[in-house]
Image 1: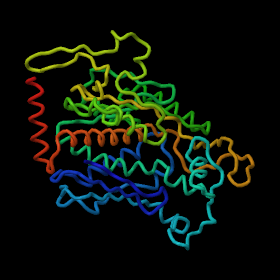
Image 2 (image 1 turned 120 degrees about the vertical axis):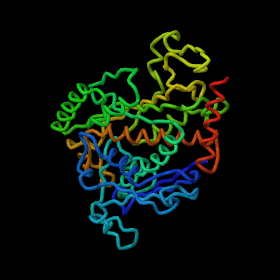
Image 3 (image 1 turned 90 degrees about the vertical axis):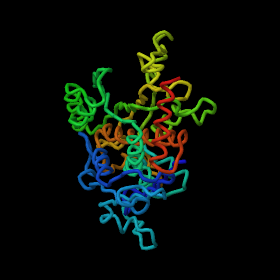
Image 4 (image 1 turned 120 degrees about the horizontal axis):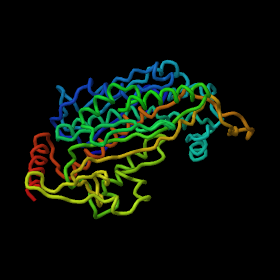
Length: 387
């Protein structure tokens, strides 16, 4: 019922997204989306592009008077760097196709596979779209979904667990508000101040060595009602959809739900969450090793998704490659890049998780207006407590 498409290149005039199926009456402001876009651009270890762009969203359709109308929503984010690339990236025959040609594929990027697949002689045709710049549009789209979830009592919190060899220590019983406060104060979205200090030093060392760092971020969704997703088909399982959405973020190489890969190392008695019941709470669990999802469906506990981001492959101390045309060995070309973008990936992770949860909410509860879906969700929550 909800769907979206993004379009645009890294050095093109703008990024555009069209969202279809959003209910009418949802309060939304440019300021709220711009806050999320600013979070994506922040974080210690970011590169020069963040100094050029200050992402701002424009509504071109689907929003009037601060509320959605039910018609397709068009979002646009202008690329300020377009002025420096308009001759090279022009859509017509006037484009300066002979300038800034890229023929040296960078290891770890889409460069070589994309050039072979689409028969491009200039790798710029690949890297412009495969760039993580596209995730700005997904953050804008995901913020619409986040607004819907917040109206329905679902809260999304993301934070960085690890950068390089440094792992944060995070109390599992840390409340939602405290977790949000700590991440908001952190330049790395890390709730552990001591770990953050060590992470900054590790990023500095990587920068000095012309290297890059990856890490792990975690997304938690609180207030998710029981029964989102389904066990009846593989493509309707909530964990399958969440994993696919998070894996679709550039540079993500691993996704886990709850204990994830840790479940392979311990016996079942230390994996599965025992079930309890009380008249005031209904069915509940004292642990959440499943990450809020069992059998492809939400079980009422917080949904926990974790992702591993590889180090960014564009290095200022370039890796070896082979020229696409001459077949001669060269050092890979260097585009403007970050040393570490794990906090930015975390913000994108929040957005894509919010989108998938919003889709699942719409599929279960339906409705064309905010009032309709709020009433249905409220009744369902009451019913679940009475089961």
